[in-house]
Length: 228
Image (cartoon, rainbow, N blue to C red):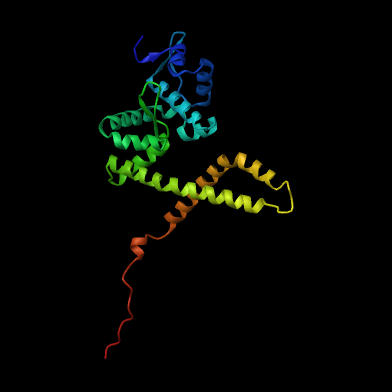
């Protein structure tokens, strides 16, 4: 057997996950189907890294539906392996940049210390900036700058939303006033994340629909003077 391949039992030991869970993730499309030779199914490093990503996102509190949305399906495995090779090179050649990508949850390190992509769709969107002529490193620095700013904005909006909820649900004449607040707070993180995501999408789409701000900042047109 090739050293880059695993049976499902070996893969389960490698990633610390039961064979049953691996099959369940495969059924959801989170990992691609293995290669079969005879009656034995073989998995490779791509499957291993993908499962490490699933585990890391679960540790952050994401459910499988959210993870599926972030990672896409196993059909994108070949592209994701390219991204994993990219972040592997960054870890060696640009450790400071690799650290910032990891800090923002775009990449993570598996139990064996190998870096891999946690949010391939987000990373792909950043790298698509290369189509307009930006180098890879510049595109990644822009992604990090956006996430730095959005992190502060999201934190501020979360505090503002929590304050508004407390204000709108407060009943000064009732001793039970805090009960609905506590129930709302329990389900707030997931709901607020979806709300912020869609609100930001709408704001960016509105921005994209506006005329080019550079093109509209032209010198004022003065009335034509009449010839004397």
